[in-house]
Image (cartoon, rainbow over all chains, first blue to last red; front, side):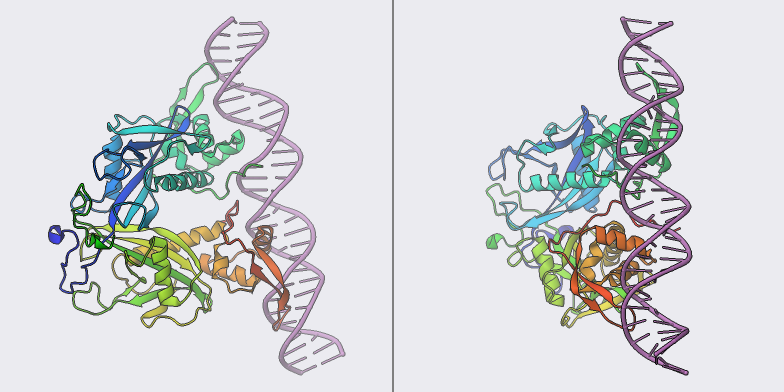
Length: 242
Length: 242
DNA sequence: CACAGTTAGTTGTACAGTCCAACTTACTTA
DNA sequence: TAAGTAAGTTGGACTGTACAACTAACTGTG
C-alpha cells in the first residue's frame, strides 16, 4: 500500500494508471456559544500556490492514506486536531466533487458534521468560532465550503424537528428549559413548553440526576443523557411555523 | 487539468505529490417489479488483477476526470449507461472510504441512490434486477457494496415513512391504490387506506387526469405527479408497527 | 337479469400528541 | 410579607392517524 505512490501502475492489470481526483475530508463543527449557534472555521494559509489564501474555510484537508484507516477516522482526527474533542456526535453529511471546486484540479471532499458541547478546551491556533446572524454567516468561505455549510445547517435544522440531536450540544447536566432553548436557537423559533416536555420526557432519552439547578427563581430539575448514544426519532415534527 | 496525470507535482508549491486514494462512484438503483422492490446489480469482470472477479456489485466505477463534470454527473452517467434512464430521482447516499475496502489500495466511493419507474427500456448486458426476499438480498456483494445497499434500503424505508419518495417509482399515470401498494412494498407492512388517501391528497403532490383505470371491479381514478419534482415532507410518520 | 365477488372510495368514532392559555409552585429580592 | 420570575402542570381545542363499517361501481356467472 505504501509503495503505491500517486496512482502509477500497481496491479498486474495496470489499469489504474489514470488521473485520480484529490481526496479531502472537511468537518462542519457546531456548538452553542453565547446563546447562539456557532461554527468552527479556520483561516487558510497564505503560501504561494495555496488556493484561497487567507480565506476562511471549514477545518479539513487531504486524506492521509498512511494515517487514516477510513473516512470517519480522518474526520475524527481533524476534529481532534482543531478542538481536542474526541467523542462527539459525528455524522456524514455528504460529498462534493467536481472539476472546478479546487483550482488545483478535480477534487472530491467528504464532509462530516459534528455537534459538540460548549465547554471544549483549547482551540488550535488557526481556528475560531463564528456566529450566524439571521441564520446566515457573514463571511465568504473558500472553495464550495459555503454551500457545504448551508447544507449542514439545513440538515441540522431538519433533523432537530424530529430527533434528539440537540442533546449532543448540551453539557453533561442540563435542565429541560436549557434543552428547549437549544432547540429554539437551532430552529430559530419558539416552541411550546408543555408539548416540548411531553415529547422529551416520553422519549426516554434523558434521566434526572439527584440535583436541582438553583437560581433566583424556582429550581429546575437537572438531567443527563441516558447511555446508548443513538439519537431518538420522534413520530411527529414540531408543527411548522405560520 | 489534463496534464495532471496521476497526482504528480503540478502546482508551484509542489505539495500535491503524495498518494491519492482511488475515487469511484456507485449507484443503488431501485425499481418496483413484479410487486416487489428490486435492485439493479452487475456482474464484475473476470480479468486478471480484477478484484472480486465475477462477483455481483453495484453499478459504478472510477470517476473519469475528463468526462465527469461532477459527482452527480458521474452517477447520472453510470445510471444512463446501465439502464438508459436519464431523469430519475437521484440522491446522494453517502461515501465509503478506507484502506481496506478495495484490494487495489486506499479507495473512496461516492454512493448515490436512484428511484426509477418500472418501464425502463433495455438493460446493459451485464446488468440484472435482483429481488429482496424477506427484506434481504440473498447474494453476497463485492467490496463493501452489501453495506452500502443496506444503508440505501434503510434510507429509503426511513424516508418513505414521511415523504413522497415512492412517487418516483411510479409510472406516469397511476391510481391511489397503486401508490399505496408501493408504499407497502417498500415498508413491508400494510397501511390504512383512509389515512393514506387523506395524507397523499392533502399533500398537493399529485393531480387527477381525466381518465379512470378500468378493470374487473370499480374503476379507479388515475393521477399523475404534479410538476415541481421536489419530494414532499409530511409532518408525521405513518404510525410505526406494534 | 339478478346476484355474488371484488376493489374503490367514504364516513364516523376513538385516540395520540401538539397548540394555546391559564394556572400552580418554588424560589429570590425588596 | 409582597412582588417578580422562571419551572412545571393542567385542560380544552384542533389535527391527523387507527380502526372498522359502510357505500359505490364495476365484472362474471347462473
